[in-house]
Image (tube, rainbow, N blue to C red; front, top):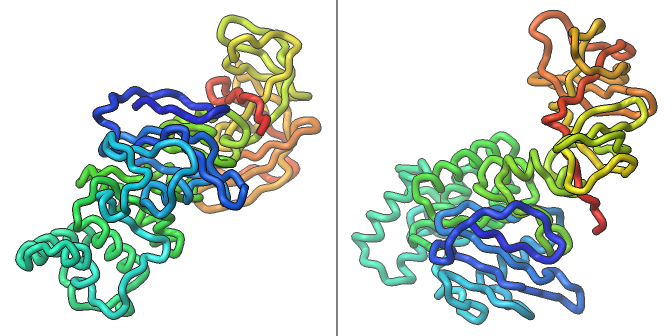
Length: 378
């Protein structure tokens, strides 16, 4: 889809025709008490897409969702729903489903009546209500729970009821406002998979607001990383993680070793860069030349460690293990190469023991996994 991003934003474009666009922000600006929260935000969302607005507190993601819901109106710019201007359209006429952070179930109503509430307001026939509520409870894997009250349900079950209530009216667009933040870690992971499954089955256009990088990576078709009211990066989960445009996006989505390097030489699409004892090859950004400085990053899981002697032909740098943390599924190392320290993540060895503090190792940075970054001037 054609992703139009605000001034200064960086991202890869993906093509889609206007007829397939369900939601569009067109240079939308919103301020509160003179403080600009959104600045000329432009963004297209495709029909059936799962799009996530991700960013730190105060970046404008929740304000964006409230604009879509009709709870706020833009100061400038136009919000389109299904191709029609919607700045002043009443919330009840927007064809939306909304799941809140607090779930907002009616405590005095049982599961059936909570889910059926929106249908009753719309005067849907009783037989149709029974049919659709049953379908939704099957979809969220809560059959037989119709007569239970919210107080009798676990957090994960309450979340499913809230989702069923939002979906039972068959909305054109589902809005999720940090819906998993009140769940414990295990339930959060389970519901990430469930939300993705439900989206795949219903193909309902879904806009998620979250500060959790894991939720965004697991569930999204595309992620819009926001900062200070603008979109810094708009891409697929793989693109955001492996091809971030700047150091903010790189370090917000996962961990990274970020270095200021000097370009030693260039050849075609590659550049040889050096940082003290570290020397490695990176993809060369357009216009880079020898003698310039270049910001690069490498993810901890992409740093390769070798026990001495290193494999023949491997381009390695001598390093020393400083710290070791065993985490079960992986081992986190801190290694020192000259004056620089790097974070390294590796699976536990199949044989023997992990590297030990003080052990000498060879450090290798695969050129295909080194990320050149644009200057982050914000």
